[in-house]
Image (tube, rainbow, N blue to C red; front, side, top):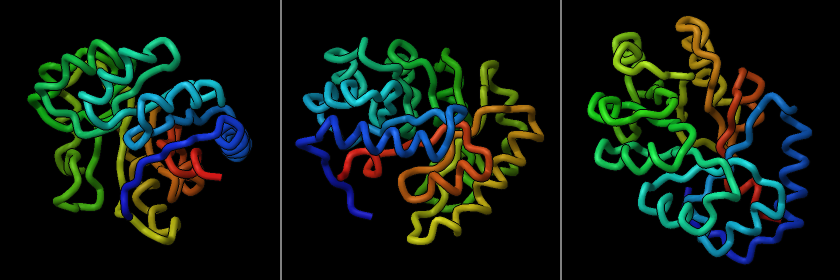
Length: 205
């Protein structure tokens, strides 16, 4: 799936998409607007459209965007968390979705979700399911779990991964489940997502 920048965003378009998706998912699911490909100049459009929570993938971009628009949103970190970037995430975000290394766990100080690699893809970050119980003992403020299934054209192929994450959350008493993106958020919500991370589905007309 090719990456692309979103420019010339329309507040009316984003607002209409947001309201439609909220209607599909209900108030219990938090919509996190993924801003990896949204320039800092475009963020006021998201605020005008009613976006409340944004998720950034890179600590450097997080810092730059927060400097300009910090009060406009609640900030989450949704990208791979490097331990040397934990200080920035601690200072600027209310939640990290992607805790997956012992070194980052030693430096992070905010509530976190543990990223679980359920697909076994080497290209993906995340704690293997077999190591999850041991990893959970490393951090005192784990609120839930996050996963990213393989990219797919058929959202139904993600269902098994989402269901497994929900089962793991239930096993360990973790309520928050960050799962589902623009490709499969409806299936994720069916399987118990409490947060979905959405990009293109919010921004495109």
